[in-house]
Length: 291
Ligand code: HMN
Image (cartoon, rainbow, N blue to C red):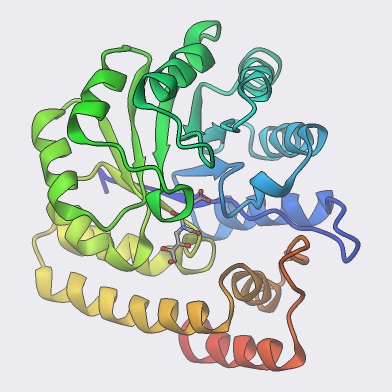
């Protein structure tokens, strides 16, 4: 498999919202030992990162590095609309923990101009010896980067690619065509196959925490030219993803991991705790698609 599969790492929280370190380590191990994942995207949306304090973000980066060591590739998402925090986290993960690749979400909420966005990225990588992957997720941030915006960001040689969580396949094709040497990691799991056909280098997603085996088989079938098999797997995958989305995304993935014996814990408030009904649906999803 030449294309890489990364899980967007979940964080395990206790019922009171504090970090469950043991559970978080179990999620890391499950991804490495059972899922045989190529890498982990740490501190992204799936990690509930944007609801966390700086000290908790740092502790998660620390325990993930400690648990994973060099067993898989690690990407630390350090972006925040507090640029000073982003720089502090970048410095911490690279210089204190030894992460080699960082990523940063586009700064959101204030309708920053493109020159402000470019300044943000250049500042984050300026003082660290690491490469950066832009995290573009317009549906959650409201920030859409154009092809020319990407070209300007990519002028910085330390900005090596994009985690592209977007259903705009025209822009994806234009990016692939214009930047053959930049890394494009696709972030919408339910659309993996069309993204593979446009030449992405791999994928990062939340559902790979529980559904990596199908995604790996799909990538292998795609690379072997067996489009029928790859599409069949995408259909099965999307039955699973639809069921997960209908029941509550992160809560359900955590419940599915619990069915696999992993202490994935709770989501963080204001996300709600799973109801008994959600738990029961999650068991059914597990039995139907993942057992
Ligand atoms: C991250 O944790 O930052 C991600 O990689 C996010 C990833 O793109 C996911 N998007 C969101 O959770 C909003 C997808 O994996 C997504 O969960 C999946 O495609 C189901 O819709």
